[in-house]
Amino acid sequence: MRTSVTEPRIPTIVPTIDLKPWFDGDPRVRARIARTVDEALQTAGFLLVTGHGVDPALPSRIREAARAFFALPAEVKQPYAAKVGGRGWLGPGAEANGYSEGTRTPPDLKESLTFATHEPFEDPVVNAEWYAPNVWPREVLELRGLCEEYLARMADLERALLSLLGEALGLEPDFFSRHMDHPTYGFNINWYPGTEVVGEPEPGQFRIGPHTDFGTVTILDRQAGKGGLQVYTDDGGWRDAPFDADAFTVNIGDLMARWTGDRWRSGRHRVLPPPADAPAEELMSLVYFGECTPGTLVESVPAPVGRVAYAPVDSHVYLRQKLDSISVG
Image (cartoon, rainbow, N blue to C red; front, side, top):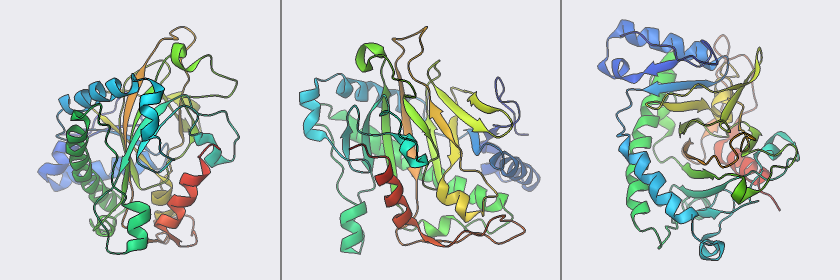
């Protein structure tokens, strides 16, 4: 089976990759998929992936449970308040992703439930910073089981994607995945309510401001909307991202871009504010942020694969700096 291209609005730049033939293992098909991935990640830094094997009922059930939490009064949600990169509830005004680009934008028009890695690590200092226990809302007890099941599926998919990415560069299949023996990850359930909740957007205010993600690969389950995801390309500027209800949207983060010596683009994106012609539009996204094992030294792949030789960085020193940069207050 050959890869297909989903249009409607960014032709050929964001392809749809069917992972089933990749898993099936025909060498010629796998080579063709790897070439398509390499080409796509050199332009916008985004892919759509189908054939991933995740039951579509699972994200639907997570949205239903999360919506019940977000509908609670602010005083009920407040005990779960967390800082960016923590575990719990990020309320209105907590985050401004445009800050990561040095742009002082108004706060993002969203609320989030945020969870992350919780399995203990051997280093107590690293463990205290990156492996704190998750905080699950008592008011929505079913959310924990649903999210833990979903995160297990995301971890499997992330490992498969990293193997694909290694082969797409002509490197060993475990070139990236071998740095995943005890990885961290972040997981946000982002709620984008309409203007009856957030009010009229200020000038330059978005549901999520323009930014690139910070880690290796991001796996996004999203909903279509007028106030939805846009991606940035050099030739076309900001464009609405293509949508496929059966696909995850996958984008490259800063660490992966550095690792590949900027061969692959860290996908710059934003989420538009509630649209003037549909002010009550409500969307919810499930966002899995792949990272790697703390202490991983990220060094740029040399030429001819890499194009820029970045100074080596400690993966989690870099991640902490970026997470701190988008905190409001």
